[in-house]
Amino acid sequence: MNAVMATATGSMIRREVGADGICLLSFDRPESGANIFDAATMDSLREHLEAIENDDSMKGLIVTSAKKSIFIAGADLQTLLRQAQSRELRAFIAEGQRVFNRLAALKIPTVAAIHGACAGGGYEITLACDYRVASEDPATRVGLPETTLGLVPAWGGATRLPRLVGAEVASEVILKGKLYSADDALRLGLVDEVVAREKLLEAARNQLRKGKR
Image (cartoon, rainbow, N blue to C red; front, side, top):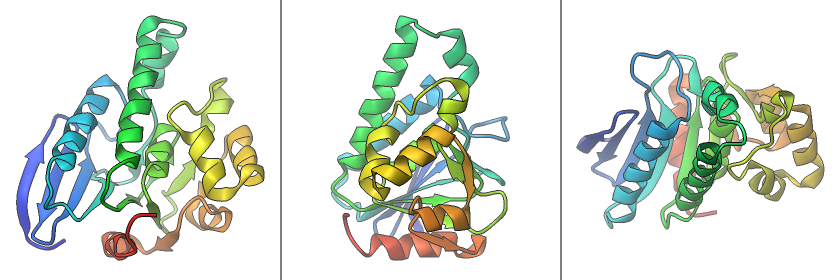
């Protein structure tokens, strides 16, 4: 990135804004090798999006991860299964929908820079972005495995994916619950570009130049 002009750190996500107005949101769950979506992470994301919405100097947004081999591994399944059928679970799902819709509604172009496991809610947040760039690394796996757990994609995946790749491919991806390599994800249309890991942010910035999709 260009020189960092401003930074802000939440408990789960770091925000950096370059001199060119490009914002980098880096998921980095503390004291954990994996990023997952729980209530605290969703709260942090909402707060960062509010700041981005209110900053007219922003020109584009890149969503990425600071972890070595995981983008976002999905929702906190232990909590979800423990809260099954509870009011808390319904509220958490509804909040995730609101936050992801907020990301999708940003007036600036957005791109997900994916390296590592990108599953479930982790892939759904990329679907709320305008573009998706993935690293060619073997650690990068993309998909919606919810059905293998008796669940369905609840944060927009079931509606945004068909608009992206068509109903036939989307149905296959959702019903099989498979995680795809970066090359297979590109072939299916799940991502827009595959590059070497060291070129990931550069490619993401190039995608932003296309503007809103």
